[in-house]
Amino acid sequence: MSFDMNKLMRQAQKLQEEMERVQKEIAARTVEATSGGGMVRAKVTGDKQLVELVLDRKVVDPDDIEMLQDLIIAAVSEAFRQAEEMAANEMGRLAGGLGLAGLPGFPPGKGR
Image 1 (cartoon, one colour):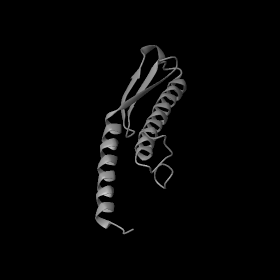
Image 2 (image 1 turned 120 degrees about the vertical axis):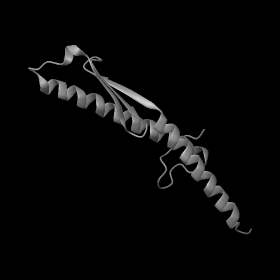
Image 3 (image 1 turned 135 degrees about the horizontal axis):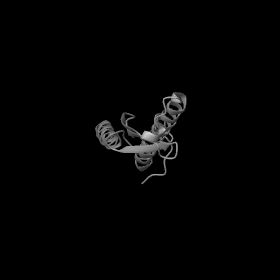
Image 4 (image 1 turned 90 degrees about the vertical axis):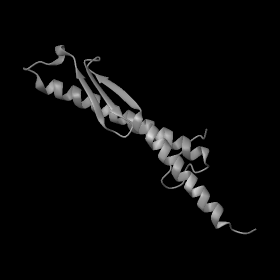
């Protein structure tokens, strides 16, 4: 059995293109998290950019800024956690579909 370097290079190129495609899809998706019973809402992209933060007027109390800060941190932190989980799941599917799950740099995945 001979080693085909050209075939390996084509497979590596295909993997790189597929990873770039999935990363663009992840970046275009958003997740949303809330805190304070929905009074604070944070929206984050798959590449972890905070793109929206909405505060209900009722949660803005000048005498309790600490509570508002805590609610903002909770909503944003949860949105980032969800974005990370979404990205890991998508990359895991890619890795599993290509038989790479569990290799260094690829999270475990179930395949497609």
